Amino acid sequence: MAATVATPVTATEPDPVRCGSEEENRGAEAEEDGARQQTGPAAAVSHSRPSKLPLSRIKALMKTDPDVSLASQESVFIIAKATELFVEMIARDSLVYAQQGKRKTLQRKDLDNAIEAIDEFAFLEGTLD
Image 1 (cartoon, helix red, strand yellow):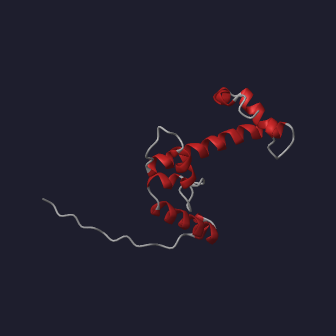
Image 2 (cartoon, one colour):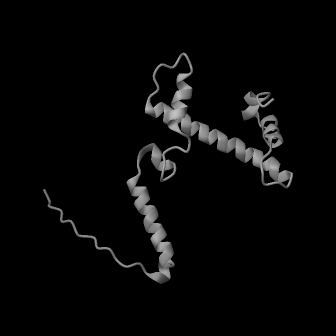
Image 3 (spheres, helix red, strand yellow):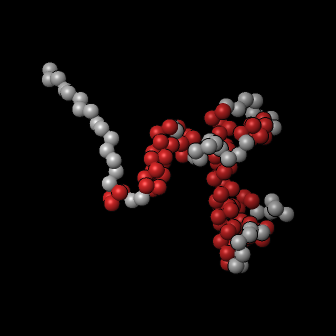
């Protein structure tokens, strides 16, 4: 059996010509540190919070359903993430209609137009009335 020898790796100073400015280097190091610290479902989300929505309220809403007696943390997180993605998707699609009207602010008519035009939102037809 052959013995393997581990060679130590030393940190070297980055070449400013090759790597860009000092500020960019610090930003890249901070991103690497953040990427190393987070794992699991929270790693794909923001660095400060795993969910943008309050998980306690989502859990309370889930428990209003008589068929739901217990809700695990994982299921609450998944519902929160799905809700975030849904809101982001409908907002982006509605923004297209606001931009066509040369506006930056979403209005109800933009949501109505997105719901009417996009098949994925057909289940929402008539809910804003």
